[in-house]
Image 1 (tube, rainbow, N blue to C red):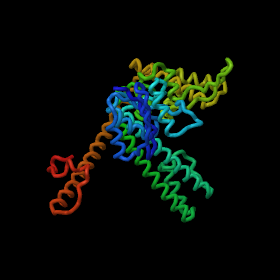
Image 2: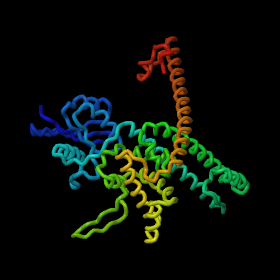
Image 3: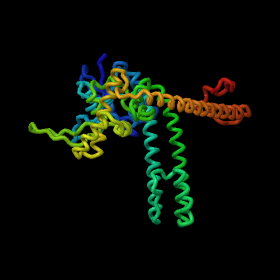
Image 4: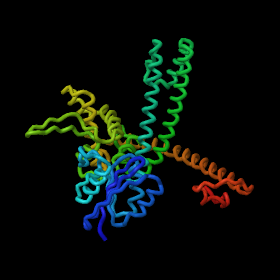
Length: 404
């Protein structure tokens, strides 16, 4: 049987496929829709010895999950490093390029995390988006006050002092502005409550990472930052050196080399923004205490490098230390035993509370499902002409005690 190399150029509504058979010297190209019927027909036509390549785009993980168990290999290409003909760029050529580079072993690939790690990353992105939305809302509230010559001098506009301050200002604001401000405060309170719920989910999911306690030996690293670092890095063994991890995080300078001369610019920022945020949060605490990180900051400050460059340099130094810790399974060399014990105690308390909330939420969902099944069974017993949803067919007709 001739081995086939398949390149898939995936879009929202269509997929362009190129099937390259090297031994037979044949190339087949065709277009299919992403509708379930056409997609299932394509998946059924795949063979166990096939190798498939597709670009890392939004939704690519869905296709990886559905294809990987049917074929010998699925390679996810890095689109920023793909070799394509820019003068003749179209779906046909893109899928052909994927198949050809897969066949000759020159396809630049990216690591595909498992589903649980992808869920962790999605949770981190959701929290960051919620924080950004809350920040934008607070800025609009400050702008509304500034339009009327007022301001809140504190840092948290949702604190008790800020709420009392805003309540006293109500009579000095126009009616429309007062209503807008009240609506913004309600939305901000809602986002604050959502953030607490998200962080409770993070507390529970973070427990699945055995290296979490290891990273929490670092001053300034709590459950959230450790969870962000671990979920973003994934498997540490895919980085052969600390420099490769720093490059992945985008904490290395841009290199402009020509004619034997080299010039370095700012950091590439090519990696995860969440990872750089977590590292920056940690080094802010580390630089407040005596040690190598504070010394590095002072040394760079004396050279007038600025706070941004100092923080970036410390973040890279910390990331290299984290690579050593995860690779060798060692604690942080500057760990403080009393601080570690305090962190562990607080983490245990928060995890216990988060698990209680999670169990209550799961029980609520179970009761909701049981009530829906009871309603459907009641309608069916009355002879109502109402089709049962496909997803509930497996549970429909069974005793309610068996559901949930």
